[in-house]
Length: 74
Image (cartoon, rainbow, N blue to C red; front, side, top):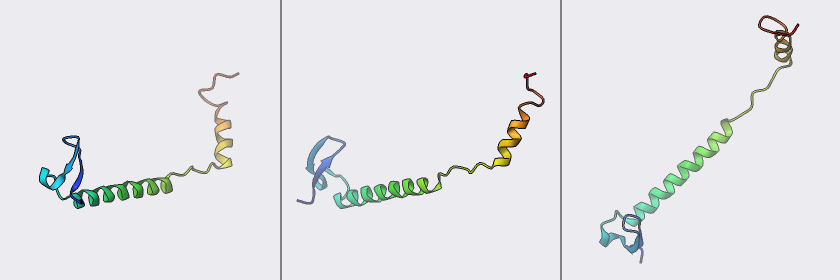
């Protein structure tokens, strides 16, 4: 039977239409939509996360600044 399914509120498997749960087909559709939304978010997030390239001139400037003001080395 297509009406038969798991009722999470009562923690039993029963006829969802008779129990007053919204249309079981709508529940399945909502679950699939939410799963697709999460999958899309994961794929988008992985595409956005990148490592910033380090330039060699910035490293040289940082090394020069270590011996400047605020450095306690003599």
